[in-house]
Image (spheres, rainbow, N blue to C red):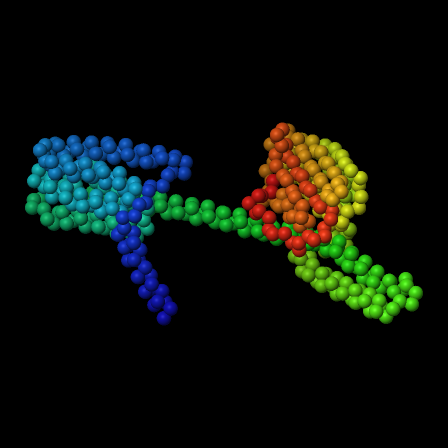
Length: 436
């Protein structure tokens, strides 16, 4: 039953599509060439002028006779039909087909057996251009119907003829078939390229979303140890606090026991949720107990980078002090990622790392000079800037990245040190800004 319904729909959809394509006066301009711009349009106009001159010459020397005003009008309108087909292909095709039919009837009286009849060479060429322009814009099945109508028009001309005729219909039909096939093939190729471009855009957006989720998972895994440490401290302090007070009240004991119980349950839930994220990363199991880095290890990071061949200098402004663990971790990771980007994308450049401690915020700035030469092609799609932006947004901070006037690159992150009142998680960052 379903097969019958599908077959019925297919049989119904075919004629409806042909009707929609061939029974309309809608404007459908010829698309511009991707590389040649308007050049194909100019070529078409020049070709129409040349064919029109040839058609007029044939009309004057025997097809319609030198005094046939109707014949010369048909010649002019056949050239005009091609120009109209560049904007409104369907009405132009109907008009050109009617002109083909009329040209055969008008020119029959002056028929010369040495010439093609019922169609002449220039008329066949002009109508072939109309069919080509039509096939570029409509579906292949509709173009095939238009071709069939054109051939039937020629057969009707020969059937109404009062004298012998030659093989103009057969030869013209071969040219028309070639025009329709060429147009349909070009249209299919253009649609395939458009679909491929759309698919590439969708793929890029999906890759950006996946990268965003991967970066957030990575950040969550790294912050797990920080949060777990604080929850463990709360639990231990709540357990030890009653022993630091002589004869503590029962209410205090109950409150501290409740705090400890809530901390233990929250820690268990946190580990359960983060365990799902860790299970997706095989490398996470090997580093799950490693301490998360802080700004105290920044000199160690710079030393490792220098040993890799990158010229790095550093400076510290303000009085260094302990910061919230999440801020320290994010600042360290931003500097680490910026240095990695400089090593990958700016070979031979010198890098400067600046750290400024303010009263309410910390600013880290990594700027590299112009590279000595072109950077090697980076495999895959990078997402370093996306990760840095997510880390800054998570804390309510700001990240600014971009080229410097001297041809280098700069990464500046401003992170607040007071995290009270911070929302649970920021909105997704702009996926259009890709990593370096």
